[in-house]
Length: 107
Image 1: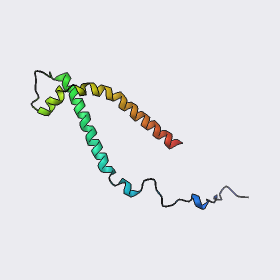
Image 2: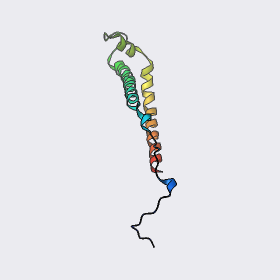
Image 3: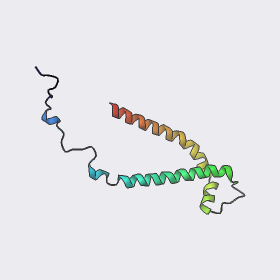
Image 4: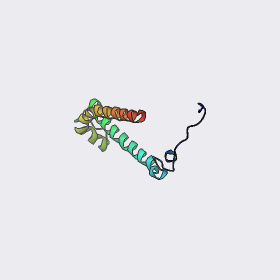
């Protein structure tokens, strides 16, 4: 009769091998990709926020900031409507992504 301290033998086909989920050569460009995604995301968020905030504090037709790019962003009509539309969708996407990862981790 075996005691509780005896180890259960592991079959040879279940022993770990050299295979890994993420081999090292797969992740060599991950930091650069992450940095690029952060820069692009920050610039899009800044453009949308500048457009919405610029509409509130600057009269589009009479005043100029002196910067052509900022003036063009403030006078654009697209981002004024895109930002309030994208926020609920992004929050929903992040929530369901987190929920799926929790299901994956705990099953």
